Image 1 (cartoon, rainbow, N blue to C red):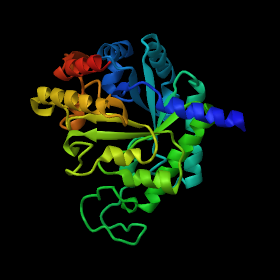
Image 2 (image 1 turned 180 degrees about the vertical axis):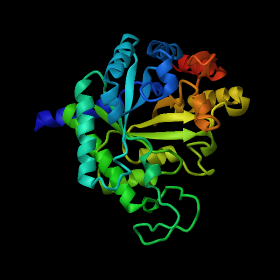
Image 3 (image 1 turned 90 degrees about the horizontal axis):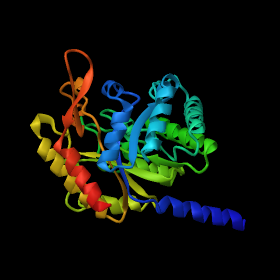
Image 4 (image 1 turned 135 degrees about the vertical axis):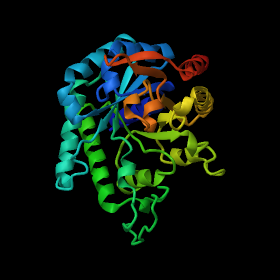
Length: 341
């Protein structure tokens, strides 16, 4: 019993005693531009920026189809002292209601166990899904579990546990719980993160933590410029303090100016990232800052996803996507990271 208690204390201390995590998001396994820019080049930029983490999405299908690429990504990251933060994202089974809850949980558990077993001890942190709160939010014409009918076009702000559709919430919870079990079955020392799309979606976390007691280790949050200041949301709410009330380390695993540099706003994007990075690095409750994202993705056209990159890519003569230069945000953020270290 004494050994168990001591091990638990050491584990909890390790969770909270990590150095501040500077990170970059990317899609080296899932998106076209990232496939055409060499992995070594991507990781060299992460290293040059001064970041120690590269966050990337991996589904069960991409793990099976691209295992060799993930192996290469990890090996090259290790050479540079960079750690990967894989985001284990669901496939079509989450939204396919023909897949029962037990089947969904088994699929999630088996996926997590398979990938974590392969990289046990080399990848130490795993994010369980991505913004599943958005999938679960109540929609117009639906009824909350408390019996209230949602009559409006937009979604609720997500601050209440009742803002989430009972059926979709249960599917999201079961998937997250399955991933959690698979990770811990394969590597008990690995740490798990659960995120939301940000804003005031803490009602989703309240249900996971307080009602269903899903035992993940780190609370991740996403934040974009139109949401304002995390310490003064709508002028009064200290969201960081509220989130810390769950008793978990708090990581910001996506952040940027909304739409990035769209419309030629490169300097505005750089200024936002630099100012927000300084603010959140100083906050004692925030333990990580991951900018979204490394490369522009112009193949998304006018969608906001096209212009979030720190680095621009372009198509030259129909020969594929190639690097066309860094944006001011790259240097601004690099300066902040270096000064904070």
